[in-house]
Image (cartoon, rainbow, N blue to C red; front, side, top):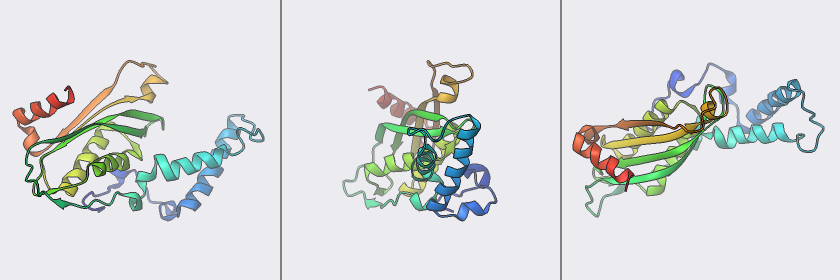
Length: 210
């Protein structure tokens, strides 16, 4: 368990492999070697100045950035504070930038997340909501699971079931390949606790259009 979220192999895409326990530098070295072979197989000239360091750049990007959420050590440290202003209404943070990676084709998912919660005695810093979204996004994902993972993390951090998460994102596996449809986006939502009630659900959605 990672502070409230159970990482199942089917959820977190983990496999039985000794590579899981490698340090970041070891992972970078291995990925760089494999990516170099991919580039060579494609017929690219790695002696070219522009391509020579690409395997290392890609490996570092995978480990330290776009897949950093696979490492539990990168999980945001969230501190809960007393709700000393006695604010018990809905708090909405919308248009949170979201960048993830489609696990089917390893191309980007780009969109925005909208989060709402109703405090239950404790609150967290607003930036921590963004960090939770980013952490859950920085791994190979499908949008449905990503939406639920963010909701579960927020429920744990805020110690409340009253959480709403909506994601509106474009998938480059749809836009840049296959059907090549650049005009669509995918919307997913997780409504928990009081947000299952029609009135609170409608209130949340009304803020997204204000």
